[in-house]
Length: 138
Image 1: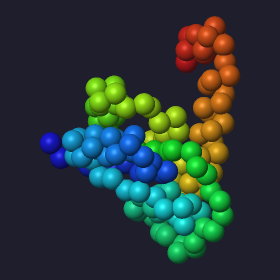
Image 2: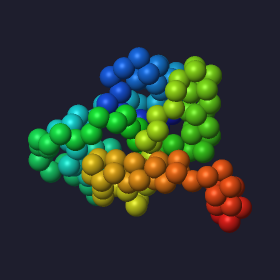
Image 3: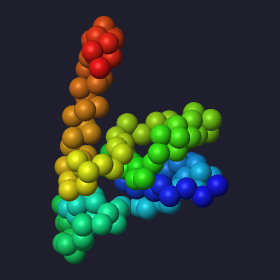
Image 4: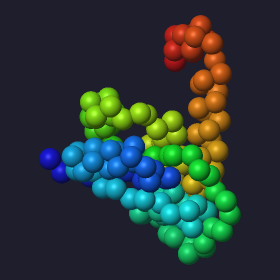
């Protein structure tokens, strides 16, 4: 079953990355490895979103070493299948992941990474009762 979704890989040159690639192929998802040289390009441009174009600027900084995934064009069912595949194949989750949206298309990889790190730290610094309280107010 061919899907239209795509997964953008950052720093996943590992056994876990290989397993995630296998999962993507099984689900018919496109795979794209984002090179550090593109870290200052808009994510929308990297993902080929209409209205965004690559600047051609080459990033020469240190970047980040964290593993990160960006999911493009996922329906709810595709996301469920993707996450279920992680459990089924016993793949450890990637902490930093995001779905490509209108809100983050204009961000570059560095900005998205920093935002995901903040969100991840915020989620993991809450006590269990705070997490429960937040879910009840959503």
